[in-house]
Length: 272
Length: 272
Image 1: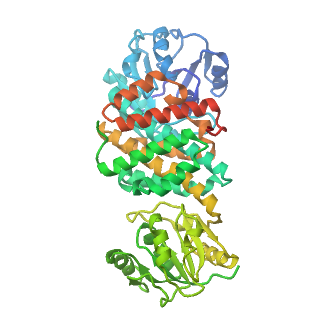
Image 2: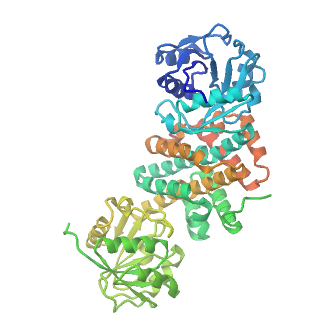
Image 3: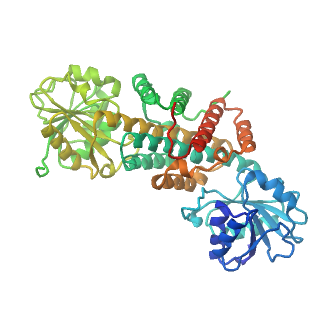
């Protein structure tokens, strides 16, 4: 691999992903030369953070100095952006989506297409340690892949080559491990608020659960009333949730799934 | 409060909770004098770890030297154990259950009853930092409460007085935050195994999700396809889960709950 090379990078999108990726790339010595967003406010706000960046209102980037164009737009907008994007011949155009295949960029004429996916949850209100964030890269041509890999290694120590197929499965696993657990933590905090209990009380338990899951198969170390088959506690809990039919339904379904998983055995996947 | 006093303690039960609590109490200078379990093997195994402890086969503890008797038995067995237990007058008898009320110990004649609940998930295979484990105490008499509080502070810096009512609500919140999230992490790892992906890939994302939830209202920082209303990704994910109807049903239900929570607003509880 060539020694680290500084790139000029244009960013399409000024949402959560761009908001974290752009400063990280700039801090690694790359130049963010342009930032596009559909409405003016986000691109201007992000450009103010980055001295070399110009906010642009058009997807015609043929006259923008950039070896790499990163698309950090909503998944649903990717196809439209790819169809409208114009870049000079040989520009690397990579999207940052976990769920979309490489092929969604096929319509970008003259580009070397790729994927540059940071596997992390970003919100503007909280800084993220990019050096610890896995970056998943993919490309059609080996040379493009090397360049994206090099760019990834300039901001993170965890870089993986992952195909579109495997990336979509990873994204699905992440929805369970991150989006869904976050929702359950929200329900848990809501129940604590209603009982006037501080949420700090549950913090050690949550941390221990996560640590244990990192070391062992969670199915094998499952605890709680459902896996014990403790019908009295289950009934009491459902009764306590009577004001919350939605939480009640989640409680029933997850408890039943825990029971079924336990009788199948921890190394057995659910099968139709 | 009186200065730290060493207690003689009898343990009823030799499961996960006893297995962690007994060595912790012994390390703090208390004497575990007896360990009861229904079958001989567990009490003998645990007694071998504790030089002063005698494995006992009877719930008649009148002649055992112990100021405190801790009941670390399954919730469903508590009532039967309370009915059969015999202790000398004035002994403190406390259970260690999150879901059971103090009153379940009412049948223990001559005892000062209480609760000594370590809010943590224990499995024999993994040591736990008790000093960071919240201990929730409760008693009918103030003097008993002070003694249990003192005992709790001898092994943990986090001691709370919590009523039976609040403790049962806390236990319910813990089921969502710990038991259910653990199950989702299990599903996530199962999906990674099937895609031949290392589970380490998701670790930074999981840690970030937990850190964020500790600082903010999870409902307010929810990410993912469900909260974005990205129907294409939801459909693709359900399709990928077609071999796993149980996981599919969980996916649908949690995605719908995330949608409904988002339209209700992050500070709104689910209401019937």
